[in-house]
Length: 323
Image (tube, rainbow, N blue to C red; front, side):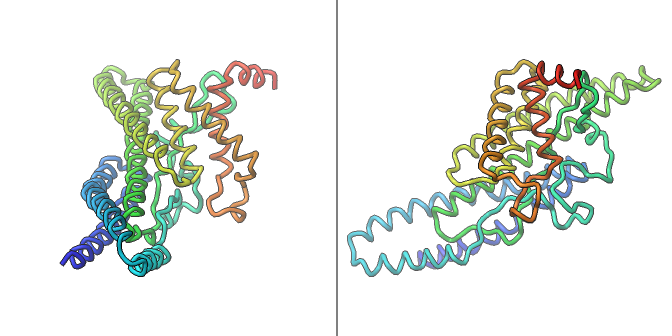
């Protein structure tokens, strides 16, 4: 009876996770199309699926631990069979992986931070203006995380709990990014309206947009922080580009809400240290053929520009003026 129940739960969990992956990737496509409300609906649906699964996985983990404790008192043959089964399931499973390239988006052939063929207000808000040192736009990492459909959760209880936490972290990042980009689009839209000749008729609308943007920035900050906390608690290696993207965007949110924020400085110090480590360890390659998940040169330059501008602003501006 218990075996049948466990089989049913495992089967249900696998199907639910596959559907959650589908919804997550649907949400990432909507983010790229700047349909932020629809994207949030997809990510919210993913969270509603994952929450009860996390409870089931944690319950299985505790039961599995108790079973192993009881099994130590029995013949060693039984534990060998169990370990063999676990090894087999681990071999057949595909790890949950992170990707910033949505293969279904034909217009995107690389993990570039901006859609080259779309020039939206949100894109304008994230472009870098190297020539204008007084009004430089900071680089925003705009790509949501896509989960390859072949990714799945192993049947091992401990692995399921761990990878569900990773899945939740990914969705948290996607939700925070959606709020972030939506806020940027509202700010850019209100700025363009303010510069137009018809100011009086749009002032009320602009105030509303700015108020909504402020709320979205605050929501984004809280969820980025949650994603970072989950990231630090995971003891497995996470793609370095994800770490850089999360740290960069959270640092920019801190700067947007408080330009003298100590937390902003800490974020970019950590990001700069990570980038120097990647350079020193030769983990960063511009040639995509040398690594499975290389960092695009435009993205690398954008991240480095943020760190240099925010951490070494005085030196950076003097050097730029001298050049």
